[in-house]
Image (cartoon, rainbow, N blue to C red; front, side, top):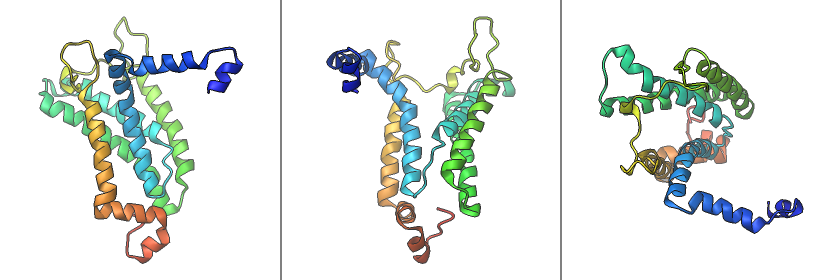
Amino acid sequence: GGIIITLVGGNPLLAYKGMIEGSLGSKKALSETAVWATPYIFAGLAVALAFKGGLFNIGAEGQLAVGAVFSALIGYALPGWLGFDLPTIIHLPLAIIVGMLTGGIWAGIVGALKAYTGGHEVINTIMMNYIALNTTSFLLNGIMKDHSPNNVSARTPLIAESARIPAIFEDGLLRVHWGFVLALLIAFLIWWLLNKTTLGFEIRTVGLNPDAAQYAGINVKRT
């Protein structure tokens, strides 16, 4: 990268200095970096866990989009469907769980095709990405779009306060929220799952050699 910047007449040191200052140079920068990193941590874990099982999950983008749209749907529409507001202790976990389930089901389609038909997960997850992204775009520009006069973008109505992950700091100046902490906890949980549990051992064994895993009595299709 530095070579390319130099070739086009720029100063790579200034470029990298700006990148570091912009991401880590202040409390505000650190907060924004954490906010933007949070969904990427979850998506990276989705790819890493599958990779340990010998699968190349190229569909994290589509799975994230599907999960996010359904999580948002629960976040803004559920109180209207029920006719009353929900407490945060119910509404927030419900929105998160629905997002997890729908993203998981979307990924599970490819998993089932791999296990029972031998369909290659790289090709299928790439194709499922296109379906997911175009479907969510259709929804966000259609029946799920915020039709308030001031909105011109493809987005849902605002999520209810009861379904929002709260910010860590209450001063209102920093946006970093408890979702970032949750992402770090899940990263630790995935490490523990893979290295300290029977299921993790089975996943790693299937990833290294599915034939040997099958011979050892591990259910490769289920894994």
